[in-house]
Length: 121
Length: 408
Image 1 (cartoon, chains in turn orange, red):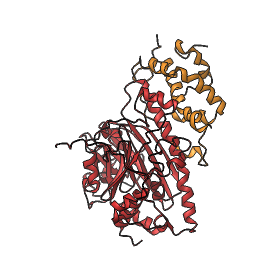
Image 2 (spheres, chains in turn orange, green):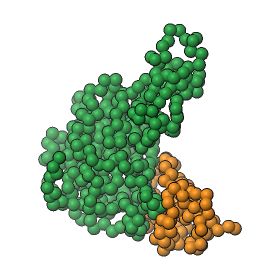
Image 3 (cartoon, one colour):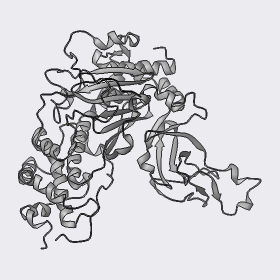
Image 4 (tube, one colour):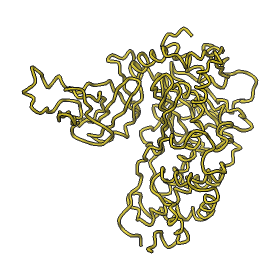
Protein backbone atom coordinates (compact mmCIF):
# COMPACT_ATOMS: atom_id res chain seq x y z
CA UNK A 1 0.00 0.00 0.00
CA UNK A 2 1.56 3.30 -1.02
CA UNK A 3 2.02 6.01 1.59
CA UNK A 4 -0.74 8.59 1.43
CA UNK A 5 0.62 11.12 3.93
CA UNK A 6 4.04 12.81 4.28
CA UNK A 7 6.59 10.73 6.29
CA UNK A 8 6.38 13.02 9.28
CA UNK A 9 2.74 12.11 9.80
CA UNK A 10 2.91 8.37 9.15
CA UNK A 11 1.14 7.73 12.46
CA UNK A 12 -2.01 9.26 10.98
CA UNK A 13 -2.15 6.92 7.94
CA UNK A 14 -4.81 4.79 9.59
CA UNK A 15 -7.16 7.80 9.52
CA UNK A 16 -6.77 8.08 5.78
CA UNK A 17 -7.67 4.35 5.64
CA UNK A 18 -10.63 5.04 7.86
CA UNK A 19 -12.12 7.66 5.53
CA UNK A 20 -11.32 10.76 7.61
CA UNK A 21 -9.51 12.57 4.79
CA UNK A 22 -12.29 13.71 2.45
CA UNK A 23 -12.46 16.66 0.11
CA UNK A 24 -15.67 18.54 0.89
CA UNK A 25 -17.42 19.99 3.93
CA UNK A 26 -20.49 17.89 3.11
CA UNK A 27 -18.45 14.69 3.20
CA UNK A 28 -16.76 15.76 6.41
CA UNK A 29 -20.07 16.53 8.07
CA UNK A 30 -21.43 13.16 6.89
CA UNK A 31 -18.40 11.42 8.40
CA UNK A 32 -18.82 13.32 11.67
CA UNK A 33 -22.50 12.52 12.04
CA UNK A 34 -21.98 8.92 10.92
CA UNK A 35 -19.39 8.28 13.65
CA UNK A 36 -19.85 7.51 17.32
CA UNK A 37 -18.64 9.96 19.94
CA UNK A 38 -15.91 7.43 20.87
CA UNK A 39 -14.66 7.43 17.28
CA UNK A 40 -14.68 11.23 17.18
CA UNK A 41 -12.80 11.39 20.49
CA UNK A 42 -10.17 8.98 19.17
CA UNK A 43 -9.64 11.05 16.00
CA UNK A 44 -9.54 14.27 18.03
CA UNK A 45 -6.97 12.88 20.49
CA UNK A 46 -4.83 11.58 17.64
CA UNK A 47 -4.89 14.85 15.65
CA UNK A 48 -4.69 17.59 18.30
CA UNK A 49 -1.06 16.97 19.35
CA UNK A 50 -0.01 17.22 15.68
CA UNK A 51 -2.11 20.13 14.45
CA UNK A 52 0.51 22.86 14.95
CA UNK A 53 3.06 20.70 13.11
CA UNK A 54 0.48 20.01 10.36
CA UNK A 55 -0.05 23.76 9.85
CA UNK A 56 3.72 24.41 9.74
CA UNK A 57 4.26 21.59 7.26
CA UNK A 58 1.45 22.75 4.96
CA UNK A 59 2.81 26.28 4.88
CA UNK A 60 5.87 25.05 2.96
CA UNK A 61 3.60 24.92 -0.07
CA UNK A 62 1.76 27.68 -1.90
CA UNK A 63 -2.03 27.47 -2.01
CA UNK A 64 -1.92 27.03 -5.81
CA UNK A 65 0.23 23.89 -5.68
CA UNK A 66 -0.25 21.58 -2.72
CA UNK A 67 1.11 18.09 -3.43
CA UNK A 68 -1.35 15.19 -3.05
CA UNK A 69 0.14 13.86 0.22
CA UNK A 70 -0.01 17.33 1.77
CA UNK A 71 -3.56 17.79 0.47
CA UNK A 72 -4.66 14.63 2.30
CA UNK A 73 -3.01 15.98 5.42
CA UNK A 74 -4.84 19.32 4.96
CA UNK A 75 -8.11 17.40 4.70
CA UNK A 76 -7.38 15.64 7.99
CA UNK A 77 -6.82 19.09 9.51
CA UNK A 78 -10.12 20.34 8.08
CA UNK A 79 -11.79 17.22 9.52
CA UNK A 80 -10.42 18.11 12.94
CA UNK A 81 -12.10 21.53 12.59
CA UNK A 82 -15.35 19.77 11.64
CA UNK A 83 -15.44 17.41 14.62
CA UNK A 84 -13.87 19.50 17.39
CA UNK A 85 -17.14 21.22 18.46
CA UNK A 86 -18.81 17.80 18.81
CA UNK A 87 -16.05 16.58 21.13
CA UNK A 88 -15.33 19.78 23.08
CA UNK A 89 -18.76 21.32 23.67
CA UNK A 90 -21.66 19.31 22.26
CA UNK A 91 -20.58 15.87 23.54
CA UNK A 92 -22.51 14.29 20.67
CA UNK A 93 -21.70 13.78 16.99
CA UNK A 94 -24.58 15.90 15.75
CA UNK A 95 -26.27 19.00 17.15
CA UNK A 96 -29.08 18.02 19.52
CA UNK A 97 -32.03 19.43 17.59
CA UNK A 98 -35.10 18.07 15.88
CA UNK A 99 -34.22 20.01 12.71
CA UNK A 100 -33.07 17.31 10.28
CA UNK A 101 -29.44 17.64 9.22
CA UNK A 102 -30.21 17.18 5.50
CA UNK A 103 -32.40 20.28 5.52
CA UNK A 104 -29.38 22.52 6.10
CA UNK A 105 -27.87 22.66 2.63
CA UNK A 106 -24.11 23.09 2.54
CA UNK A 107 -23.31 25.09 -0.58
CA UNK A 108 -20.14 23.98 -2.38
CA UNK A 109 -17.23 26.07 -1.15
CA UNK A 110 -14.98 27.81 -3.64
CA UNK A 111 -11.84 25.73 -3.84
CA UNK A 112 -9.24 27.95 -2.18
CA UNK A 113 -6.34 25.70 -3.08
CA UNK A 114 -5.10 23.48 -5.90
CA UNK A 115 -3.67 20.02 -5.61
CA UNK A 116 -0.58 19.73 -7.76
CA UNK A 117 0.31 16.56 -9.62
CA UNK A 118 3.87 16.65 -8.34
CA UNK A 119 4.72 14.25 -5.54
CA UNK A 120 6.20 15.93 -2.44
CA UNK A 121 9.94 15.45 -1.86
CA UNK B 1 -12.36 64.40 5.90
CA UNK B 2 -10.81 65.09 9.31
CA UNK B 3 -11.23 62.19 11.70
CA UNK B 4 -12.71 62.73 15.13
CA UNK B 5 -10.40 62.38 18.12
CA UNK B 6 -10.41 58.74 19.20
CA UNK B 7 -12.28 58.55 22.49
CA UNK B 8 -12.09 55.88 25.12
CA UNK B 9 -14.13 52.79 24.13
CA UNK B 10 -17.33 52.43 26.11
CA UNK B 11 -18.56 49.64 28.35
CA UNK B 12 -22.30 50.33 28.58
CA UNK B 13 -24.27 49.20 31.62
CA UNK B 14 -26.13 46.19 30.23
CA UNK B 15 -27.67 45.06 33.50
CA UNK B 16 -29.60 48.26 34.28
CA UNK B 17 -33.33 48.06 34.98
CA UNK B 18 -33.75 51.08 32.68
CA UNK B 19 -35.19 50.38 29.24
CA UNK B 20 -32.51 52.35 27.50
CA UNK B 21 -33.34 51.73 23.85
CA UNK B 22 -37.01 52.68 24.20
CA UNK B 23 -36.10 55.92 25.96
CA UNK B 24 -33.72 56.78 23.09
CA UNK B 25 -36.26 55.80 20.43
CA UNK B 26 -39.73 56.79 21.66
CA UNK B 27 -40.93 56.85 18.04
CA UNK B 28 -40.76 53.05 17.98
CA UNK B 29 -43.37 52.59 20.71
CA UNK B 30 -43.52 49.91 23.38
CA UNK B 31 -46.76 48.04 22.70
CA UNK B 32 -47.37 44.42 21.73
CA UNK B 33 -47.10 43.35 18.07
CA UNK B 34 -50.16 41.79 16.41
CA UNK B 35 -49.51 38.28 15.08
CA UNK B 36 -51.39 39.25 11.89
CA UNK B 37 -48.14 40.94 10.88
CA UNK B 38 -46.65 37.47 10.38
CA UNK B 39 -49.74 35.50 9.36
CA UNK B 40 -51.81 37.70 7.06
CA UNK B 41 -51.98 36.53 3.45
CA UNK B 42 -53.04 40.04 2.46
CA UNK B 43 -50.02 41.67 4.08
CA UNK B 44 -47.79 39.06 2.45
CA UNK B 45 -49.22 39.87 -0.99
CA UNK B 46 -48.64 43.57 -0.40
CA UNK B 47 -45.05 42.85 0.70
CA UNK B 48 -44.51 40.83 -2.47
CA UNK B 49 -45.81 43.62 -4.71
CA UNK B 50 -44.93 46.84 -2.92
CA UNK B 51 -41.75 45.93 -1.04
CA UNK B 52 -40.04 43.22 -3.09
CA UNK B 53 -41.39 44.82 -6.25
CA UNK B 54 -40.18 48.35 -5.46
CA UNK B 55 -37.18 48.34 -3.10
CA UNK B 56 -33.52 47.68 -3.85
CA UNK B 57 -32.69 44.06 -2.98
CA UNK B 58 -29.27 42.44 -2.54
CA UNK B 59 -29.01 39.73 -5.19
CA UNK B 60 -25.29 38.91 -5.03
CA UNK B 61 -21.72 40.12 -4.74
CA UNK B 62 -19.25 41.43 -7.27
CA UNK B 63 -16.91 38.52 -6.48
CA UNK B 64 -19.42 36.32 -8.30
CA UNK B 65 -18.89 38.28 -11.54
CA UNK B 66 -15.24 39.30 -11.43
CA UNK B 67 -14.46 38.93 -15.13
CA UNK B 68 -16.24 39.93 -18.33
CA UNK B 69 -18.56 37.13 -19.33
CA UNK B 70 -19.12 35.94 -15.74
CA UNK B 71 -22.76 35.42 -14.87
CA UNK B 72 -25.05 33.74 -12.34
CA UNK B 73 -28.77 33.04 -12.17
CA UNK B 74 -30.80 33.79 -9.04
CA UNK B 75 -34.39 32.72 -8.50
CA UNK B 76 -36.55 35.34 -6.79
CA UNK B 77 -39.65 33.34 -5.93
CA UNK B 78 -41.53 36.24 -4.36
CA UNK B 79 -41.44 38.07 -7.69
CA UNK B 80 -41.89 34.86 -9.72
CA UNK B 81 -38.72 35.82 -11.56
CA UNK B 82 -35.49 34.17 -12.59
CA UNK B 83 -32.78 36.83 -12.69
CA UNK B 84 -29.51 36.71 -14.64
CA UNK B 85 -26.66 38.88 -13.34
CA UNK B 86 -23.86 39.27 -15.88
CA UNK B 87 -20.71 41.30 -16.38
CA UNK B 88 -20.49 42.61 -19.92
CA UNK B 89 -17.43 43.19 -22.11
CA UNK B 90 -17.58 46.80 -20.97
CA UNK B 91 -17.10 45.69 -17.38
CA UNK B 92 -20.60 46.77 -16.32
CA UNK B 93 -22.74 44.48 -14.16
CA UNK B 94 -26.31 44.15 -15.41
CA UNK B 95 -29.38 42.17 -14.48
CA UNK B 96 -31.96 40.69 -16.81
CA UNK B 97 -35.10 38.63 -16.76
CA UNK B 98 -34.06 35.10 -17.70
CA UNK B 99 -36.55 35.00 -20.55
CA UNK B 100 -35.99 34.46 -24.26
CA UNK B 101 -37.86 37.14 -26.24
CA UNK B 102 -39.09 34.51 -28.70
CA UNK B 103 -41.43 32.36 -26.63
CA UNK B 104 -40.26 32.83 -23.07
CA UNK B 105 -37.87 29.95 -22.45
CA UNK B 106 -34.86 30.28 -20.16
CA UNK B 107 -31.58 31.43 -21.66
CA UNK B 108 -29.24 30.74 -18.73
CA UNK B 109 -28.87 28.50 -15.72
CA UNK B 110 -26.44 28.09 -12.84
CA UNK B 111 -23.29 30.20 -13.04
CA UNK B 112 -20.25 30.42 -15.25
CA UNK B 113 -18.55 32.40 -17.97
CA UNK B 114 -19.68 32.67 -21.57
CA UNK B 115 -19.82 34.94 -24.60
CA UNK B 116 -23.52 34.49 -25.30
CA UNK B 117 -26.62 33.26 -23.58
CA UNK B 118 -28.12 30.74 -25.96
CA UNK B 119 -31.72 29.68 -25.58
CA UNK B 120 -31.88 25.87 -25.64
CA UNK B 121 -35.21 25.95 -27.43
CA UNK B 122 -34.46 27.52 -30.83
CA UNK B 123 -30.89 28.77 -30.47
CA UNK B 124 -31.55 32.51 -30.08
CA UNK B 125 -28.31 34.04 -28.79
CA UNK B 126 -27.96 37.13 -26.58
CA UNK B 127 -24.77 39.04 -25.73
CA UNK B 128 -23.68 39.56 -22.14
CA UNK B 129 -25.06 43.09 -22.26
CA UNK B 130 -28.46 41.70 -23.27
CA UNK B 131 -28.63 42.41 -27.02
CA UNK B 132 -30.07 39.84 -29.39
CA UNK B 133 -27.02 38.75 -31.39
CA UNK B 134 -28.63 36.18 -33.65
CA UNK B 135 -31.78 34.16 -34.16
CA UNK B 136 -31.89 31.25 -36.64
CA UNK B 137 -34.21 31.68 -39.67
CA UNK B 138 -35.07 35.22 -38.55
CA UNK B 139 -36.41 36.17 -42.00
CA UNK B 140 -39.45 34.08 -41.15
CA UNK B 141 -40.59 36.46 -38.41
CA UNK B 142 -43.05 39.19 -39.30
CA UNK B 143 -41.86 42.79 -39.03
CA UNK B 144 -39.58 42.23 -36.07
CA UNK B 145 -36.54 44.37 -35.36
CA UNK B 146 -33.71 42.54 -33.56
CA UNK B 147 -32.77 45.78 -31.81
CA UNK B 148 -36.03 45.68 -29.85
CA UNK B 149 -35.66 42.05 -28.82
CA UNK B 150 -32.91 42.23 -26.23
CA UNK B 151 -33.25 40.61 -22.79
CA UNK B 152 -35.53 42.62 -20.54
CA UNK B 153 -33.27 44.55 -18.23
CA UNK B 154 -33.76 44.99 -14.47
CA UNK B 155 -32.39 48.03 -12.64
CA UNK B 156 -29.05 46.97 -11.17
CA UNK B 157 -26.53 48.91 -9.07
CA UNK B 158 -23.40 47.84 -7.24
CA UNK B 159 -22.48 49.49 -3.94
CA UNK B 160 -19.22 48.54 -2.23
CA UNK B 161 -19.28 45.12 -3.92
CA UNK B 162 -22.95 44.32 -3.09
CA UNK B 163 -25.08 43.85 -6.21
CA UNK B 164 -28.58 45.28 -5.80
CA UNK B 165 -31.54 45.05 -8.15
CA UNK B 166 -34.87 46.84 -8.21
CA UNK B 167 -37.83 45.32 -10.06
CA UNK B 168 -39.53 48.69 -10.31
CA UNK B 169 -38.93 50.24 -13.74
CA UNK B 170 -38.73 53.65 -12.06
CA UNK B 171 -37.57 53.21 -8.47
CA UNK B 172 -38.85 55.89 -6.10
CA UNK B 173 -35.41 56.16 -4.49
CA UNK B 174 -31.86 55.68 -5.68
CA UNK B 175 -29.95 52.88 -3.99
CA UNK B 176 -27.89 55.42 -2.04
CA UNK B 177 -31.07 57.14 -0.83
CA UNK B 178 -32.54 53.83 0.33
CA UNK B 179 -29.38 52.83 2.21
CA UNK B 180 -29.09 56.25 3.84
CA UNK B 181 -26.60 56.47 6.71
CA UNK B 182 -25.47 52.88 6.15
CA UNK B 183 -23.48 54.19 3.16
CA UNK B 184 -21.56 56.77 5.19
CA UNK B 185 -20.86 54.34 7.99
CA UNK B 186 -19.43 51.58 5.80
CA UNK B 187 -18.03 53.56 2.85
CA UNK B 188 -14.48 52.47 3.73
CA UNK B 189 -15.14 48.98 5.04
CA UNK B 190 -13.27 46.68 2.64
CA UNK B 191 -16.25 44.51 1.66
CA UNK B 192 -14.67 44.11 -1.77
CA UNK B 193 -11.59 42.40 -0.36
CA UNK B 194 -13.45 39.71 1.55
CA UNK B 195 -14.78 36.60 -0.16
CA UNK B 196 -17.43 34.07 0.69
CA UNK B 197 -15.81 31.01 2.25
CA UNK B 198 -18.93 29.40 3.66
CA UNK B 199 -22.58 29.48 2.62
CA UNK B 200 -25.58 27.49 3.79
CA UNK B 201 -29.30 27.64 3.12
CA UNK B 202 -32.55 26.05 4.15
CA UNK B 203 -36.19 26.18 3.14
CA UNK B 204 -38.33 26.78 6.20
CA UNK B 205 -42.01 26.61 6.91
CA UNK B 206 -42.32 30.05 8.48
CA UNK B 207 -42.95 33.65 7.52
CA UNK B 208 -39.73 35.36 6.42
CA UNK B 209 -40.06 38.02 9.14
CA UNK B 210 -40.40 35.39 11.89
CA UNK B 211 -37.02 33.95 10.96
CA UNK B 212 -35.34 37.31 10.33
CA UNK B 213 -36.31 38.39 13.85
CA UNK B 214 -34.33 35.52 15.36
CA UNK B 215 -31.10 36.98 14.01
CA UNK B 216 -31.76 40.57 15.08
CA UNK B 217 -31.17 39.95 18.77
CA UNK B 218 -28.70 38.18 21.03
CA UNK B 219 -31.20 37.62 23.88
CA UNK B 220 -31.63 34.02 22.65
CA UNK B 221 -27.95 33.13 22.50
CA UNK B 222 -27.27 31.66 25.93
CA UNK B 223 -30.35 29.44 25.62
CA UNK B 224 -30.28 28.38 21.98
CA UNK B 225 -26.54 28.12 21.53
CA UNK B 226 -25.84 25.97 24.57
CA UNK B 227 -24.17 23.43 22.28
CA UNK B 228 -21.88 25.85 20.44
CA UNK B 229 -20.95 29.14 22.11
CA UNK B 230 -23.19 29.72 25.14
CA UNK B 231 -20.72 31.99 26.91
CA UNK B 232 -19.17 34.02 24.07
CA UNK B 233 -21.91 36.62 23.78
CA UNK B 234 -23.36 36.42 27.27
CA UNK B 235 -21.42 36.81 30.50
CA UNK B 236 -21.33 38.71 33.80
CA UNK B 237 -21.42 42.19 32.23
CA UNK B 238 -24.18 41.21 29.77
CA UNK B 239 -25.94 38.06 31.00
CA UNK B 240 -28.94 38.44 28.70
CA UNK B 241 -27.30 39.42 25.43
CA UNK B 242 -28.54 43.00 25.30
CA UNK B 243 -27.30 45.19 22.44
CA UNK B 244 -24.32 47.42 23.18
CA UNK B 245 -25.81 50.11 20.94
CA UNK B 246 -28.68 50.72 18.55
CA UNK B 247 -29.38 53.23 15.81
CA UNK B 248 -31.57 53.61 12.77
CA UNK B 249 -30.94 54.88 9.26
CA UNK B 250 -34.41 55.35 7.81
CA UNK B 251 -35.86 51.88 7.29
CA UNK B 252 -32.47 50.33 8.08
CA UNK B 253 -31.13 49.64 11.55
CA UNK B 254 -27.95 48.65 13.38
CA UNK B 255 -27.69 46.78 16.69
CA UNK B 256 -24.32 46.12 18.30
CA UNK B 257 -23.53 42.68 19.67
CA UNK B 258 -20.84 42.63 22.34
CA UNK B 259 -18.75 39.71 23.54
CA UNK B 260 -18.03 38.44 27.02
CA UNK B 261 -14.49 39.48 28.00
CA UNK B 262 -14.30 36.57 30.42
CA UNK B 263 -14.89 34.06 27.63
CA UNK B 264 -12.52 31.12 27.63
CA UNK B 265 -11.66 29.94 24.16
CA UNK B 266 -12.04 26.22 23.48
CA UNK B 267 -8.87 24.27 22.68
CA UNK B 268 -9.66 24.24 18.94
CA UNK B 269 -10.31 27.99 18.99
CA UNK B 270 -6.89 28.55 20.55
CA UNK B 271 -5.34 26.45 17.78
CA UNK B 272 -7.22 28.36 15.08
CA UNK B 273 -6.52 31.77 16.61
CA UNK B 274 -2.79 31.05 16.45
CA UNK B 275 -3.17 30.46 12.70
CA UNK B 276 -5.43 33.32 11.61
CA UNK B 277 -8.55 35.43 12.17
CA UNK B 278 -11.37 33.49 13.82
CA UNK B 279 -14.96 34.10 14.89
CA UNK B 280 -14.19 34.70 18.54
CA UNK B 281 -11.23 36.96 17.87
CA UNK B 282 -11.20 39.77 20.34
CA UNK B 283 -9.20 41.98 18.01
CA UNK B 284 -8.87 45.51 19.23
CA UNK B 285 -8.45 46.97 15.78
CA UNK B 286 -11.04 46.47 13.13
CA UNK B 287 -11.57 47.45 9.52
CA UNK B 288 -12.75 51.06 9.03
CA UNK B 289 -16.46 51.46 9.72
CA UNK B 290 -16.72 48.57 12.16
CA UNK B 291 -17.83 49.33 15.74
CA UNK B 292 -19.70 52.60 15.21
CA UNK B 293 -20.77 52.46 18.87
CA UNK B 294 -17.13 52.35 20.02
CA UNK B 295 -17.77 49.42 22.35
CA UNK B 296 -14.74 48.09 24.18
CA UNK B 297 -16.08 44.53 23.76
CA UNK B 298 -17.39 44.94 20.23
CA UNK B 299 -18.19 41.64 18.46
CA UNK B 300 -20.28 42.69 15.43
CA UNK B 301 -23.04 45.01 14.27
CA UNK B 302 -26.31 43.52 13.02
CA UNK B 303 -27.14 45.83 10.12
CA UNK B 304 -30.74 45.22 9.16
CA UNK B 305 -30.80 46.48 5.60
CA UNK B 306 -34.41 46.87 4.50
CA UNK B 307 -36.17 44.78 3.54
CA UNK B 308 -34.65 41.32 3.87
CA UNK B 309 -30.91 41.19 4.53
CA UNK B 310 -28.75 41.47 7.64
CA UNK B 311 -25.20 42.58 6.76
CA UNK B 312 -23.37 41.78 9.98
CA UNK B 313 -20.03 43.49 10.26
CA UNK B 314 -17.34 42.29 12.66
CA UNK B 315 -13.82 43.67 13.06
CA UNK B 316 -12.04 41.33 10.66
CA UNK B 317 -14.83 39.57 8.74
CA UNK B 318 -18.52 39.91 7.95
CA UNK B 319 -21.51 37.65 7.36
CA UNK B 320 -24.98 38.00 5.93
CA UNK B 321 -28.38 36.49 6.54
CA UNK B 322 -30.90 36.85 3.77
CA UNK B 323 -34.55 35.86 3.98
CA UNK B 324 -36.38 35.22 0.71
CA UNK B 325 -40.14 34.93 1.02
CA UNK B 326 -41.69 32.04 -0.87
CA UNK B 327 -45.22 32.26 0.56
CA UNK B 328 -46.81 33.71 3.68
CA UNK B 329 -45.46 30.74 5.66
CA UNK B 330 -42.43 29.63 3.63
CA UNK B 331 -38.99 31.18 3.47
CA UNK B 332 -35.60 30.44 2.01
CA UNK B 333 -32.82 31.50 4.37
CA UNK B 334 -29.26 31.91 3.10
CA UNK B 335 -26.38 32.45 5.52
CA UNK B 336 -22.96 33.46 4.18
CA UNK B 337 -19.60 34.19 5.81
CA UNK B 338 -16.85 36.34 4.28
CA UNK B 339 -13.17 36.42 5.20
CA UNK B 340 -10.05 37.82 3.53
CA UNK B 341 -8.89 35.18 1.04
CA UNK B 342 -6.50 32.74 2.71
CA UNK B 343 -2.87 33.59 1.94
CA UNK B 344 -1.44 30.26 3.04
CA UNK B 345 -2.67 26.74 3.81
CA UNK B 346 -2.79 27.22 7.59
CA UNK B 347 -5.41 29.95 7.05
CA UNK B 348 -7.62 27.34 5.37
CA UNK B 349 -7.61 25.59 8.76
CA UNK B 350 -8.26 28.68 10.89
CA UNK B 351 -11.10 29.83 8.64
CA UNK B 352 -12.69 26.37 8.56
CA UNK B 353 -12.88 26.47 12.37
CA UNK B 354 -14.95 29.67 12.08
CA UNK B 355 -17.21 28.24 9.34
CA UNK B 356 -17.97 25.08 11.31
CA UNK B 357 -18.60 26.95 14.57
CA UNK B 358 -21.13 29.29 13.01
CA UNK B 359 -22.74 26.65 10.78
CA UNK B 360 -23.44 24.53 13.87
CA UNK B 361 -24.83 27.58 15.71
CA UNK B 362 -27.12 28.42 12.79
CA UNK B 363 -28.31 24.84 12.74
CA UNK B 364 -29.37 25.39 16.36
CA UNK B 365 -31.43 28.40 15.19
CA UNK B 366 -33.15 26.63 12.31
CA UNK B 367 -35.95 24.91 14.22
CA UNK B 368 -37.00 28.08 16.02
CA UNK B 369 -38.77 29.75 13.12
CA UNK B 370 -40.95 26.75 12.27
CA UNK B 371 -41.88 26.11 15.89
CA UNK B 372 -42.90 29.74 16.41
CA UNK B 373 -44.83 29.81 13.13
CA UNK B 374 -46.94 26.77 14.01
CA UNK B 375 -47.64 28.21 17.43
CA UNK B 376 -48.71 31.59 16.00
CA UNK B 377 -50.95 29.83 13.44
CA UNK B 378 -52.88 28.21 16.28
CA UNK B 379 -54.11 31.74 17.03
CA UNK B 380 -53.78 31.02 20.75
CA UNK B 381 -52.07 34.43 21.00
CA UNK B 382 -53.11 37.68 19.37
CA UNK B 383 -49.81 39.43 20.07
CA UNK B 384 -46.12 38.83 20.57
CA UNK B 385 -43.98 40.99 22.85
CA UNK B 386 -40.61 42.57 22.17
CA UNK B 387 -38.30 43.41 25.06
CA UNK B 388 -36.09 46.50 25.07
CA UNK B 389 -33.16 44.31 23.97
CA UNK B 390 -35.27 43.35 20.94
CA UNK B 391 -35.49 46.95 19.74
CA UNK B 392 -34.26 45.90 16.28
CA UNK B 393 -37.33 43.68 15.92
CA UNK B 394 -39.53 46.57 16.91
CA UNK B 395 -37.92 48.83 14.31
CA UNK B 396 -38.32 46.07 11.70
CA UNK B 397 -42.05 46.06 12.42
CA UNK B 398 -42.37 49.86 12.42
CA UNK B 399 -40.35 50.13 9.20
CA UNK B 400 -42.62 47.67 7.36
CA UNK B 401 -45.72 49.36 8.83
CA UNK B 402 -44.46 52.67 7.50
CA UNK B 403 -43.43 51.32 4.09
CA UNK B 404 -46.82 49.67 3.56
CA UNK B 405 -48.84 52.25 5.46
CA UNK B 406 -50.30 49.42 7.52
CA UNK B 407 -53.10 49.90 9.96
CA UNK B 408 -51.89 47.47 12.65
